Image 1 (tube, rainbow, N blue to C red):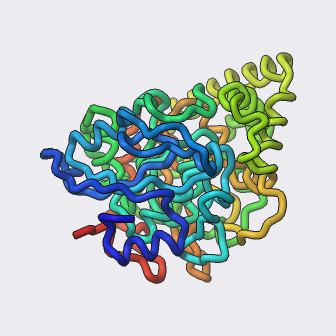
Image 2: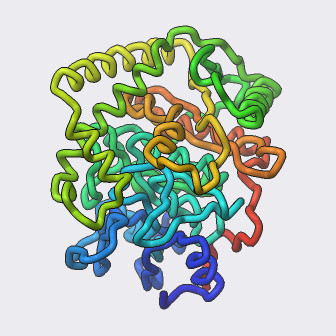
Length: 417
């Protein structure tokens, strides 16, 4: 762990946030706002000169000879790639309880999980180990850890950020996205990662129409998650936003099941080299077996459900600017919850359906639980409206400080000497 301040190395080891630290002195010249920022990237991405583990123990393939495209862009802009972040094995789960690299710990309560599969990325930002982290999201792997760890993230529009040099899981839904403490920092990172920086007309929250689904997303919430979400709606309303009920999103449970079938059927093909790999844990092997069991008829039915769902969502977004829903049904679970596959499915109950749409989704902290545990919400935007969605997030964070909370022992926002 050479190159890292002792405080960073010690806290990273305690939280099992990183798989490896990287020497990067930031010598590349860059004039962008991210120049000099410390960045951790999920260890399913190539970083030249380092081994990509995908969360598995050795043996590993040879060290990468080139950076993943998103890493190349960040380095060209002057960012410092200082660590590979811990993750769920093969990015196939939502807990980051990794046998090979250590069970990743939530910095708000170390007996709880951070979510996943980009758990190490969220922990690194929340604990102040880095300024920005990069993760991937298929069914919720940026959004649920952001919610559990109290940070901000964007699941970008599908295809906006290149995935070259990133291990695939389910390419029809895989995206690469940034995590940071604030929407402004997420926007600065996205500008570089996407290779574009459009600036939508600034809009006040008073100009925003926010749709809130009447069913499914408000069912069976932990009371303090429900309260946090109500506080967000209350803030929006107090700032002049128009809050309207949405009735056009139907059969979401069926959509969730369709998403799981499509993800598993794609993942099993891309993970074929690992079908009989002894390094893979029993839980992940179970998910691979589930994917092998998805029939052609089930795939065809799931595709039909996904097509109908996209039409429903687009129709709703014709009438509202964003759809607001909770990010997870509960706060971060304690680490010992039995069947991690079942836990993962429950965690992603409110996230997977949006992955089928290809739309941008902003994840941001709202008011915490009485015990101080983070609670998160999602804002779903129109097609291609990534920067407009981030502008809404910045406006929310300009009149609130939920994103400014720090867990006990957090360092100073990823500042490395």
